[in-house]
Image (cartoon, rainbow, N blue to C red; front, side):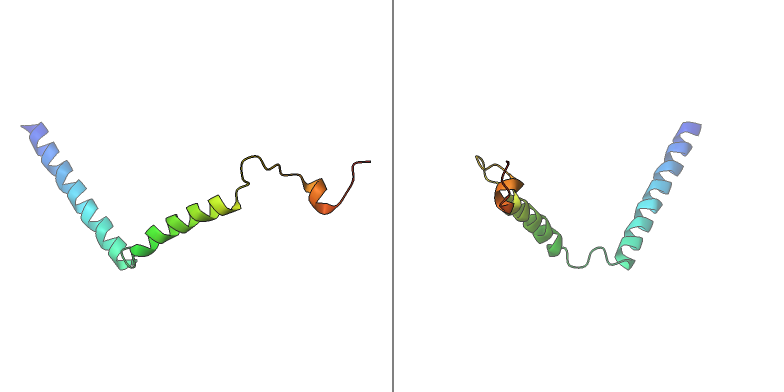
Length: 70
């Protein structure tokens, strides 16, 4: 019977904790403008694709700066 009461108290504590975390998130406005997160992920992935070198291209700073090797 003691284990049952421990389980009930633990579940109530977890439920109260979840409600407190939810209230904290609402007060800090974490749920405002949820669509922005989607676009931020999209644009960061797109920037990585644009900034990354294309296959077959070598990154050589000497050729771009006009320096010669000898």
